[in-house]
Image (tube, rainbow over all chains, first blue to last red; front, side, top):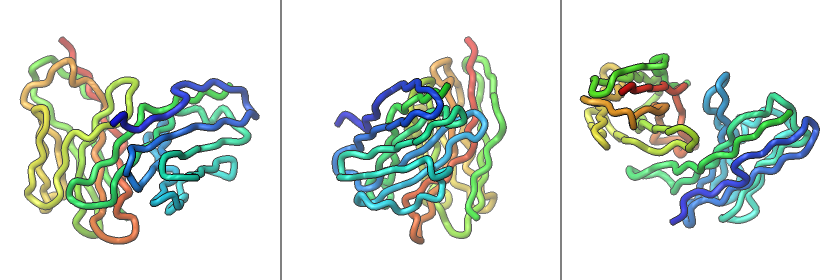
Amino acid sequence: DAGVIQSPRHEVTEMGQEVTLRCKPISGHDYLFWYRQTMMRGLELLIYFNNNVPIDDSGMPEDRFSAKMPNASFSTLKIQPSEPRDSAVYFCASSLAGGASYEQYFGPGTRLTVT
Amino acid sequence: GNSVTQMEGPVTLSEEAFLTINCTYTATGYPSLFWYVQYPGEGLQLLLKATKADDKGSNKGFEATYRKETTSFHLEKGSVQVSDSAVYFCALRMNYGGATNKLIFGTGTLLAVQP
């Protein structure tokens, strides 16, 4: 399996522009997670989905952030309008439902820079 | 609420030194415990895990024992290598309730191993 795939790997944009980050989870996984990582705040869970349905979006910082999962193999995280404080590395992860073998598999991340 | 506390970094060691990274947790029940590792420029990957009290997780020479009496899951390695330089995250997952597939991460500990 190719693992969790994220695109783009790097994104540089100007303040006020719309940014869309993409994620393809591991085939067969039914949970998908979006995280944000910064030096100041560490690793933060933004939102997660189960069977394409958003379960907990309490970590989404504000209305400028939105996430969708139109099908089991694709999810997007959109920021509009973007601001310099959104600069971070955004990770997508996927997993199978619980059990002793539970593990979240992370993608390589998208490094977002908003100037 | 449920939380994870890790020792502050960075931890700087010479090659072949003994490593301990402390992790303690607060949880209302009996969680599963994990150590994830993040190498430079990559996403997080599972290093080891333990699902119940007194379990020992081990992988790549690293070990951690689930201690319920001290609510701890300290990471140890007898002889570190330069290639172990990375950020290490302790995490927990509650084994009951509605959010059983959400991981709660510590802040991460940077390990730097010098030759």
